[in-house]
Length: 553
Image (tube, rainbow, N blue to C red):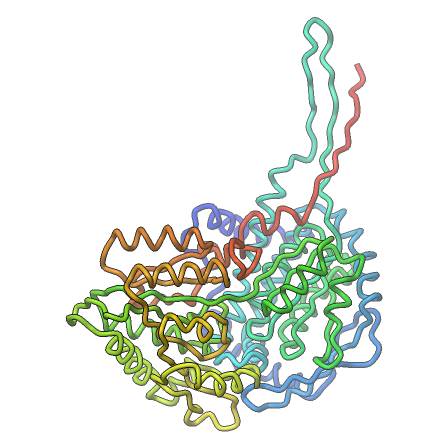
């Protein structure tokens, strides 16, 4: 076990330095290069994925009684993989039993196991890319990066915070209290870190690893057992994670039931049974605000960390690079067909238009510039497929059809040329008046966006900030040339609990959040009560018990 910690200590040290300095750091290379992962890694990963199709997934864990699973790729492939169907009570009981030895281990031993799990997951990044692609609908490059190295960085970030927080607690001290002329009172004190209990990590279908790894690894590192509950449409990425994790745990001499998979079918869900189970102590949830509210209301006796959803906004008040603005906004709206929790939905533009490097542009002209940039971006079918990916849920396609009546169609949605057999759609862009809040203040998940005509720039900032405060938001963006207006917007969005990106016109997009530097969600508005990742995300997952003994004279 010590060998695992020693093997990865340098990586951990760099990660801890990164969370303090907030500069760029990535432990796991994001490019799918044969020079990094091995010349045959891509083919090996694809072959390993294909070998899983149409077969039972081998995962030896307690309580298995039958199988579940019916994942169908948004690209049209029926995965036909079956997973062990386990009774929730049996899973929780096994996790409780296994947690004893795990909690008693040293911080270094637990950390070494967690780091080794991540290292082995990283080595299988091409397999994970295929698994994420064919469950979430992400295009291959995004699936490799977001489902692989970026997700792994998120897990490592949580480990860094956990180790940093636990290291602040000394193992033992000699406590002396002066008594004047009398001998001091002397006590030996030992401080033992204790876990909160069994943790439940509820995953989502669109980012099954990226959103799940922070809570999963934060709980494991702090001594808790974890039950991973994947979305029924995206089981495979978490099944692979659990399988690798259990192998490492067993090799290190721990009961592998420290990490368990709770797979289910959409027509026979078990999530509520697990959330309300008396022996579940921690719940990490990523998903819709509707079910997020249910989780928060029904898990009141537990620690609950949520990342839900919101209505993300872009405010356009002026620019010295209209072409860069239009291209950046178009890409942000199109990326993964708007199925990112960070994707913008609402673009606020003053009705009277804005001043740009190309002269004054009316509301309609700004909208046309974004449309033209979108058409150019998606004009090449191969590039369009790589940017858009596929649509994970059929309900999203239905949502697009219903949304057409909500405003004036600036750019209509259509299938993607060449993506035969895939569930896909290009972005729908609608123009509405700011007074038509019914249309745009509701999150309409997927490639649906609104160009909103406001009274002026101040009205645009006010409406976008109020939307974040009242409806939730994970990202916000501003385009402005006036520094006072930038300061005004920064204050307004900070008060609404959302980070702000200003004048992005190059290769960085509002959708993107970098591990170790960006705080993903603030926990300060309805988009979620947790931040991925900060100290608060890990520090309450363990407690400290003290042993005090007098020292003999």
